Length: 481
Ligand code: SAM
Ligand code: SF4
Image (tube, rainbow, N blue to C red; front, side, top):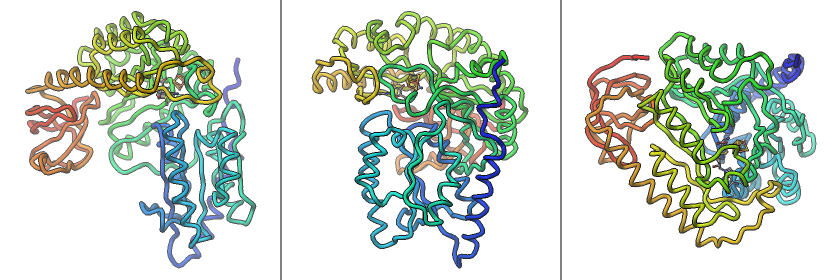
């Protein structure tokens, strides 16, 4: 029997962090005005969720959030390493933030997240960014209060990136969620898949699942606080529970969470095709709160490239899987990730990708040009395709998807959809459509009607469509589950 409790940070260590929060809070309470913090997040939803934890800790310490980095006393930049472009942007922005310290020497500048978890990046910050005070990796996030207190007490610059290679799960620390009716709920951390192009397993460690009762308790709290659109997060949610040894898989977890009463929607990301199952689709179709939305990245439509990527499925197996999902949920909204220009990709391989795009009929695609990540196996693979050729393939992919997108959007004309209003729309052309929201499948709808409020579930009849959004008028109100 696996001792799964060992992966949780001991309660005494959490108590120590809470004590550090309290010490900083007492210090801040003596100031005539509360100090400010500023956070900037790069990358995926997991990073956004991590930033919400950092923001929660800073708020408990007595810092007030600001949208202006120049007035902040603590600046936190949460970084991404998935593509080179994100890393370049981070270094660009760090120049601006460290500049603030020329006039305000007491500002504390922190960098965290996937990018700084890499040794060579930490070294670069050490040498070239002397005004950065604290650098902490993904496994160290829960220790942020202790690191900040040490620096405020006059310690020299802090670099904490090694951590426990298994990674740990910290429960019981505060969270400050972004305003609105949407919330992230992490169900697991890390990744075991080692797709050959991807840096994530190296910087986020091995898969580790939270205990189902902790996840359920957090969901109950979110529902009680009025959150209506809750996304379960994990790099590969379909392998949830494998490390727990309690005989519970992701479909079981979904069914357990779906039983939590309330007016809310539950969605999740990301699913890996090799672990997605009929049991999952049945749980989605049979749920009361579970959205009929699936993000199922296929990356490439060539079996040769899929093998080189170590993805663990073939093109036809993937297509059969989405057919199965649609049999259970004919109204499924489907999206995917694609990488163009993986090392050795030929025109024929790329045609396979276009074929999946045409047959898959996606509502949304996230398309990426392959980015070489040092330390990953793909970085060592021969790559003789020119940058121009890759760009040309990328453009053709976008064109193909654009036509499909328009057709799929047009198919919603005159349909009735349940929409959760989550904001005000802006822009002249949309002036009549004062509010915006999301369908169960996550599609953007601009809405017109009387007496609308953020957080309302409304029934909308679609009057117009565009590539970007659907437009509709409210014909009814209420949550239907
Ligand atoms: N765990 C998720 C999965 O397997 O689908 C996604 C995690 S990753 C942050 C999101 C997407 O980034 C991947 O699906 C992939 O398409 C893309 N990606 C990852 N590494 C990349 C690289 N080296 N170059 C280009 N795109 C990459
Ligand atoms: Fe990266 Fe693959 Fe893990 Fe997704 S499943 S995070 S693409 S290694």
